Each structure stands twice: as C-alpha cells, then as structure tokens.
Length: 333
Image (cartoon, rainbow, N blue to C red; front, side, top):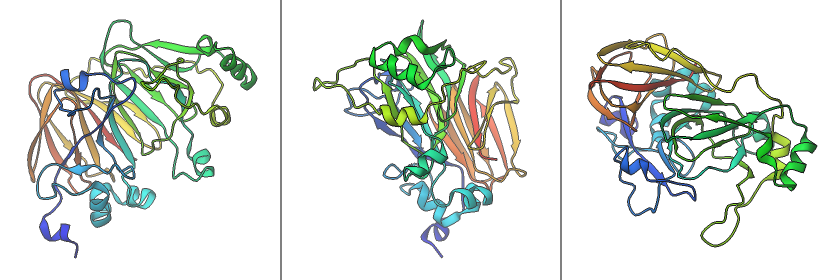
C-alpha cells in the first residue's frame, strides 16, 4: 500500500501556482489577483494546475500537501481522475490550467494537433480555450484568418512583413470566450488577462513576433517550417463562442471537445452539484469573486485566480458563493 493511502482518503485538492516571467508579461497577477510572484520583474503566466513534465503542480492543502499531482494519479488512478480518463491518459494529468497576463501582445503562433505532434515524437498536441477575466479598453486577440489563405501567400506575407493584413482580429471583452483548436493561428493581445484551459503541452510554433527585440537585443526564434506544415489556412464563419450570459445559479456550457468540457457558473447563492454520473475529475476555477467548496471531506475557500480539483470519487458538493462570483467548471468526457 502506498504512503498516500496510509495517510488519508482523497479530498478536494488545491495547488501552489508556478509563476513564469515572459517578455510580454504584466503585473495584474499581483495587482488584480493579489498573488505574490516573488522577485520576478513580471508574471506572464501563472500555472495553476499542471502535470507537464518538470512542472508538476504541488498540493497546497490537507494531508497531501507537498505531493505532486502525477504521483497522486499513480497512486489513486481512477479514484482521482476517473477510470476512462486514466485509461486514456495514464499517470500524467491531462490538462494545463493557466492564467495569462500580457502587458504586450504574445507572438502569433500555432500548435500542432495530436497526429502532427506524435509524428515529431511528442505525446500530444495542444487545443485550448480562453476565458477573458479582465480586459483593458481596445484589447484584441488574433484568432484565425480573415479569409482563406494559401500557404504560398502566407509565406510571402511573412517575408514581406505583411502577415498582419491576413489575420482576423476580435475585440476582447470581459466574459468573452475563444476556443482555439490545434492548427489555428492565434495571438493574445496586450491588456487581455485570460484563464486558459488546454491540453498538457507546451509546444508552440512561433510564426511572427511583431519584430520584437528582447533585453539582449535579439529577436526570438521563429518556427516557420513547422508552422507552415501545421496551419489550417481556412477562414471560419465565427471565431467567438456564444453563450447566455444572463443565467445565474446554474451551469452554462461554453466548450465541449474531446480534450475538455468547460462550463460557466455564475453564482449569488449556493449550488448543489451531483457528479455521480461523471467519470472524471472536476476542476473549479474562480474567475471572479470567491466561493467555498463544501463536501463530506471538509470545506475550502477559492478566490479569484485559484482553482480546486474535485476527485472523481467525490460525487456530491456544494458551491457556496461569497456574494457574486463566477467560476469555470472543467472536466473530460
């Protein structure tokens, strides 16, 4: 029997965030979310929950405090993540939950899908979604092309530094949702803080970096050949995820794909949830306000910019709002 099973039964788990400086990073994770990222000059990304190799999230609460998420999966398997999830993804936690805060625009980039990634020796590709938590006036994102583009035309535009003329720009307002499937060109714009739900991967092919110079006077590496082999050059009819923004104290579906399902819950009361029919863990990510998660195993408060993981073995919980709050509910089906 493992040391974990000797210690305790599973309970809702909170984690210690990992903070990353970025050339484009801002200060809002400290000033708005009140999280201390130490001596970093900025914080572009806060990884709230990760099973990515070398960056395993560490439990922050209860008897498992100090233990890594993937070690707990190895021990508890389906009890933690769900039998189907464990059979599919094994001992690596399958999602990466981030908050991204750009003072400047991120690079224009694209991610491979699973098939392309595995051809390159990687475990999987990267499909993701963004929920806009905070947006400064005029903030935009790049998602897809504004018309169908040929690979030759795109390559010529890169060479002539005219790639911006081919990109589709969308205004980014608080509460907006953008689904970014693998192979779609995209870039998060300045002043747009988002919660990101994604496959466990850190593979990005940088296509264009706005001719930016780093602190050493160098331009960052581009991955043009890889990007050209990856990009979907077709225009989509609509790039924004539409949902009913007026529903409270109920669950509103935002995104459902093979890699994750994400719902929005706006609360000003107490909501009881029964997850007995769901063969998956559940992540609750607070994107506004705060709430308390209560179960037979105890109660934990979750503030804006924090998440909590409900193990698959726990079926019934109560989400108790502290005034008005909003949270993302994430699982795999």
